Image (cartoon, rainbow, N blue to C red):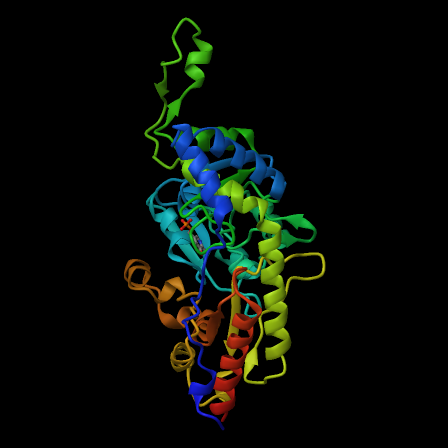
Length: 394
Ligand SMILES: *Cc1c(COP(=O)(O)O)cnc(C)c1O
């Protein structure tokens, strides 16, 4: 076998990279030149264009997906001591927003194939204090929404989708963003559409949309000056202690440019996923991520490969280092919440509480998948992974 030097790339391939070019720069420059920098016409346009793209009735632009989920829970008046069901297999944000209210995130296990929240485990975790379920479409493959919406309807719970990975994803022919009371998207730098930092709340309810709009800007209502026309347009009323979660027009301008190429970016990621799966399906040491069913669409935000550890002489940590040695960036999604000190100390979670999540986490490794990757980049990843497997079989 050749030494690994023969296939090491010249430059490091980052795990993630935004697909930005002169179009984003031109849109942002136009906003800066206009003199209106904060929330204004560009944010309003991003809201209507994004709502149209995902089939949402209402969309409210905010400065992160975390803010979006916080505002969704605020809209349903979550209170201290109440409970919200959250998968353990997710990022910090999904559960921390529940803690903002002094409410309890109740962690629930996931399905081994998709790593999404397991509906039957949701049902078992419901108590009289439960108010909402926050499913996460991990990597961009949808959770079992029909089952979850049915459970929510039976128990009078709200569903708030953490769709940070799920633009543009589909479930049974429906776009993510059009299915439940709230869908929260992230425009963070590594996500499938980026504004640097940013997010969007999609909702079916005008009432919820209005509440999110008020609460994302200090709880200030501007309806007041409409009602009392004798007052000037300077008049406003504070109706609640709100937050400062609005999206700037600078960020929104970038989002508008991104939205115009979202379809091209998606198709390129899907193509890369297909190439990876064709190459890795043949290797018994690897388990490729399941695509969406025929009536769905995986957004391919992440390509979550899993290692069949009992067929390899190395663990995931070493696999990761071997990729680095071949100048390929990778990542791990996610360290389950129940393994983190805060959730262990606050709620007494133990590692053995979620054996499936633990097992899958130990063998997961996410490969680069973004539209700026060239065909050569994709082949470099395939060659590196295949080489590591070949050198470390049992
Ligand atoms: C990135 C991410 C978030 C948070 O998004 P922000 O826009 O950074 O607040 C929430 N949930 C998941 C699953 C994520 O990956």
